[in-house]
Length: 572
Image 1 (cartoon, rainbow, N blue to C red):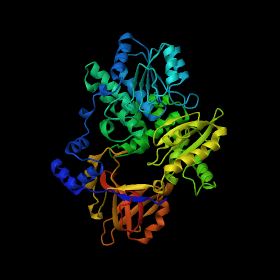
Image 2: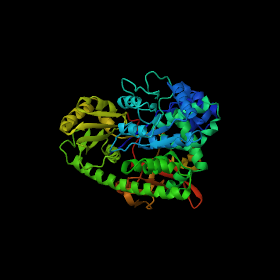
Image 3: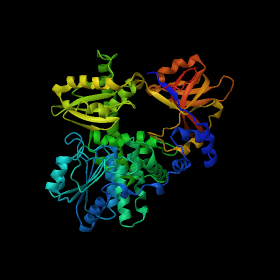
Image 4: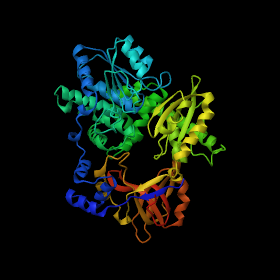
């Protein structure tokens, strides 16, 4: 699908001020303005995301109640159940809280619900599990904000609950001892972008403050916060940016055995980045909950023996390979089903159902369908006589709102702007497809179905250098809201050394017509563009990477798109 290159608007006066007052390169100053930086204070904070800039955790509603109940549990010898969701956000939360609380008590049990038997969130089965083990307190992480009935069930069994969640609350809150969620309407916490592990971390931070202990007690946990934050794809801004930076610094100093066992297979010589967490660690940890028991991910993260960690990582690596196979199989079927449907050329949404599709994989496939067709996508499979589905959306359409408008046809649903889950009766499928298509068509515009690459600036090829890459790194860590800067360079030609790699990737070797210097790069998924290179006079859209080979460093281009020469307009 053709991509639009949209050049960001510049503010020369502000760039000059930031460059002079902050003593930074003008190019970096320009990129700061593109990220909404308008003051010197904001610029300093962005460039120095240090731990001392974290907000006071007691600004979060119910934090005092949560800390007091946790302190009482420890003083009283209560049995505490750590309950988390089965994705990376949930499993890192459980591992982090377990590692922290082991400093104070041995009365701990971890619990992750089964994706297929129990589904998302706090389940009745989970509460029964707690009751059978005489649990006094449940700390629910990355879930619980809508578990009104099951929290009431826990209360009936004299089990208290502390909720650490980041999802949108419903009209009413559960009757828990404390409900920590910065999205609560009555919560004035300054940063609403935290994920589940971030909210859980704030409880840990508050507990150490309550006990007047040194923050160093939670420093060893920062890698887990960073992994959960990176893999939950929340904005890499504010406190998330601070926690990502600190966590990556810890990982690049010393990796815990479980992470090292996962990342050893990547054989990477340069420092770890958010991308390594999202694409290297995340899928392996997620494979546990998708195809087996998510507690395996928690065990791996907490493992201190390198040999045991290697064995446990191998099991999850195998599960991840199995997941990849199912991913490819379901994607091929979904594409064939959609491309062969009567609605293929006219519909603004995609809703597909097959009873044999694997419930743990359809969310990933839905994301790939969005990438391919640039429409909101819902994929459904069958479970216990009902249809269960995963929804994913393009960046400019709120799929949660779209599904909510069709809620009269659903058994239940939940999620956020870009991703959601839903359940419905099979007899309602056709009605839901029609209603959802009508709802999407009300607001989605043609340009929303065309992928956009946001371009920082047009960069003359002679400016491409390792030194520029190093300057760009002061904006890291990158992620949603703070993407790795994308540049455009013009007037490039193929040296004849470009070739196809497996999996439809391009290994590029380009130069300007009048120079001998060769620019190397990788174009992931751009294999079908190979024959366009013969046209000459290319424009390239790319990010900069540092490539280390046999101890030598060089700049490399990660090519996002290419096309024959034309004037780059500020496309809207």
